Image (cartoon, rainbow over all chains, first blue to last red; front, side):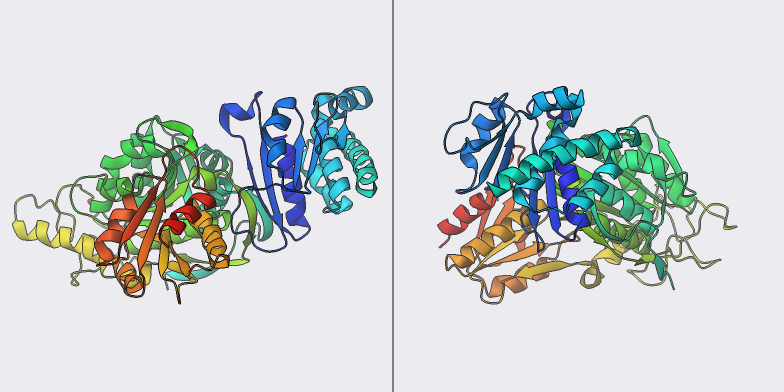
Length: 164
Length: 381
């Protein structure tokens, strides 16, 4: 999940945007409720922490319960519909991403990369080729193809949502 | 010339770096070739980076048994001719204090990156604080001066590390990067330059190493092995390094020069930035990460019709009290938000004259939000 934040931030910078990212640190980042924040802008960012997010990805019920109500009016809440019980108006963008990572890719670790694809697909903020190049640079070589496939799957789903 | 322009040895261009990695790259760019340290949260990524990079770049890396040994190794490496550094956080800084006094008194260039966490003592190791402002200046006994710079971005984690090295080498003083956990672990876009200005220490063979004619002079610095008869002692010494533990004139001259060599150069050393100060009635004085919250709050307050501005301190030590006095003349009040119980607040008060100063303190291990600063500004309407 931390990797997903780094990946999106790095890709944003690689395509000329400004990015500022923070994430859970220390014991928090290992196995408990972890969080990654990202601020993107076309100009230099004055305040680098997220205040009123335009987009939330909730991979667990805990994350959804804690953060969904803080999303900006009109903002999007993406959630894992296999793990999260959503409430209106944040019940539109659900996908069983963790289940998908196990069933389609036999690898739970790629769930975060599917989410990266979903975020990129639904927002249209990222260039696919930059995202793919950044991803390949960040993951071990032997997992490159697996991750590219997971990214493509997420993009496909996200674009469908984006056009919905 | 000691100040030279060199090709930046780390990758130039737009990059996405963490603050701690940027500080390590800044050190490498400045010419650092010795790192001695003991890992401590939240600074450890700097040590990890340097453990990978020092040897391939022709330098040396030592993991010492504690912070006392770490700073001692850095002082020794500096006298062997290397630009040398360590990184730590509050508890490690406390252990380093005796040897930092030794570095100041022996005029040894050393750079310490202090990634501040919530203290005192062990405190909350992974949480942010800014409580070491006074510790870096007054932590060792006796009168001496240091340089301390306060980065507010990952970009400045790089550029101010370079500047800390340049000032340390030029002034022969310990120089601190007063970083904070929030900036050390922030990842941000940086735009790194193709070339970089670095200061290589002055050395003229045969010159006195610990004194000069000027009362605020900075002597030439050889290294061991250069052929000089070199003695380095933490006792009072004359210009050649001979111990002078009796004569009052030796101690007086040395202690005064160690302060004056920094304080007489404040105009060259001290840097700040002003935002919306021209017509500001209330001025927020902030530094480090808090200055970013302050800038956001000031912009919001401007939209709300308040005549407020931001004075961002980049140099903390030496403290530019004259700057505060100048700004005070046009201001109705100062607001000083800090992640401590008012350490810079006291310095601002001492220079603000009749202008009222309001302190906004937060020591709960998290950064001060723009909303908190905006609320405090609202109370000063």
